[in-house]
Length: 300
Image 1 (cartoon, one colour):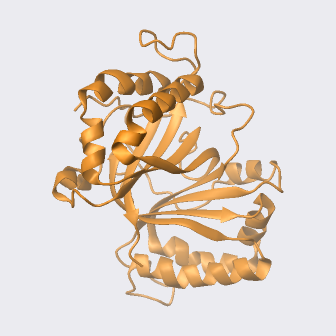
Image 2: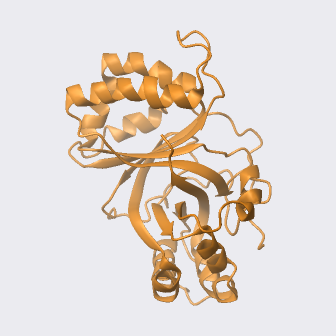
């Protein structure tokens, strides 16, 4: 596989709580805009002690104890909460060491104001202990579906402490090593998180473009060369606004799910010589940082 460029964070840390700066910034944006929240979740084997549910599995507590509580609050406040994606994370194909996720949940809220009201509700604050106590690590990424006027919107933000570009990282999620052993015919989704470069690398036909335009050229080439033949599609595409939970140097310009008819179809595409010597070069010339997570619909 092609090498991955990695600038390493020695202390990966665990991110459970909302970042106060990101929360304050969120309140400054259009309160009436519809938002989507991408949740990346790594569950504790058993919940943190002292919550009155000692011994329960982290996944069970998040799905049922926290899930039931937050749904009741959201319904009472009429937030318009809708879970649009609930997938098991099978492997982090492209991620930093220690970035292993168990579940991906994408939740829609009618407005940003609805979400803020829910989080600040007293009953939600009581329920949140079950969320935090069930998780070992998490990310919460605020997104919208309309491309921002300042896209790519990360250009005025500091460089990431570490970045990943390329194919699957050999020191990442151990589960990626068994990709070939999992059901080759099973349909899968790939969650992509993309941060664009300020300026594309020279030599691949993108000279003079910013990374956003370069990545659009990559998307156009993929649609032309592979979508129909592979049977892939993009059912969900978002534009992240902020990392509400997670390291603040981890910021994204695009987040999208790609549907593949099978693992075999995905593998055949990324190992195709035309892809590796053409389309992938366009991608890598445009991308500053990225993640790629293999997912399948969750077993509830």
